Image (cartoon, rainbow, N blue to C red; front, side, top):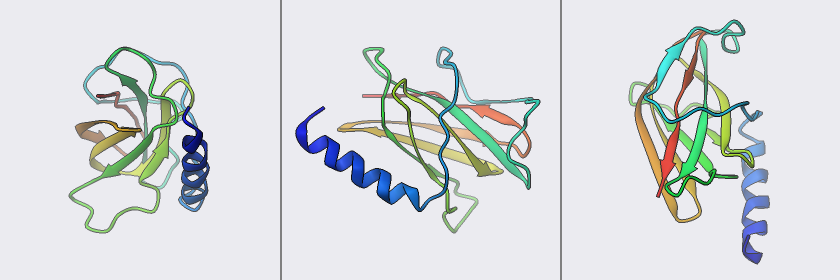
Length: 132
């Protein structure tokens, strides 16, 4: 990591600390279209959905400590927790209100996105993102 990268990472963590908790997800699978799946644990109640996945670089390396953003056109006001950070293995997870989202990932200068992520209340949806 570049010398300035640590300062940027620390600043990002401080900013995101006010956005609410971000918990890393477990396990990774190959990239596939986002599909809602039944989950015994479900999402964190109250009409929320669990969104989880992995960020990978084109070369196959995990997108470690990347910033993710979510935006749902049907929700005119941004939700308070529409950002997450991947763990060292490129995994992420967070709870979002039910809607259809576009997710963006930024890992330094590399970016990627996936559209049409359907977050269904009480279910878990997986969305993997490749950045280039």
